[in-house]
Image 1 (cartoon, rainbow, N blue to C red):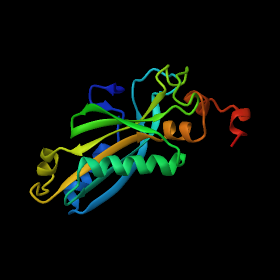
Image 2: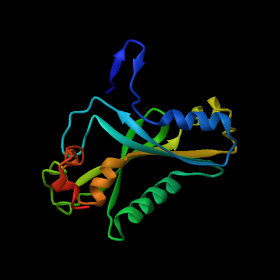
Image 3: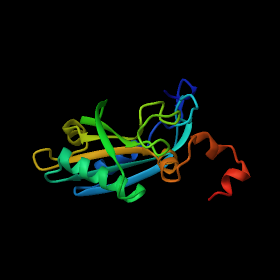
Image 4: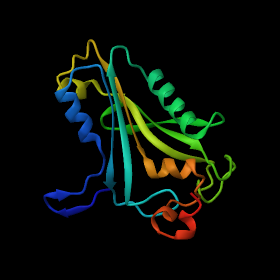
Length: 183
């Protein structure tokens, strides 16, 4: 899923290195977000682009649980999209979190019935997340007997797509003035 320039250079695939740097240079409690442009060898379609803007978040503190993660992310979605926002969490695997999940929001175009934007599922994946793996904390010098954490990452372009009810992500990159004048 990466773009290699040559054998030694790869374009940034996520903003996670910022989290690692913060964990090695700061002591808990830690609460950060790290935005940035990223590149992946994704096929362009209604919800994917090979170049997009990502924002990741990290919380490290005493007694952080998966319930904190779900509450934070659901409330974030409600703040972005309004009080009627419907979310769901699905198990997933990410190497640096355990347990891990993906959070979906109900499709804005069809209201969950299924359409071309959500590929018939009624849902659009918004982000990946999880409880940070204790080994990551140990490698960063964080005492796992005192601290736990959570992390998440989302595509800002896809988040804006949902917020502004844009049916196809590619419209945001075509520079069509007629599309841009809507905003």
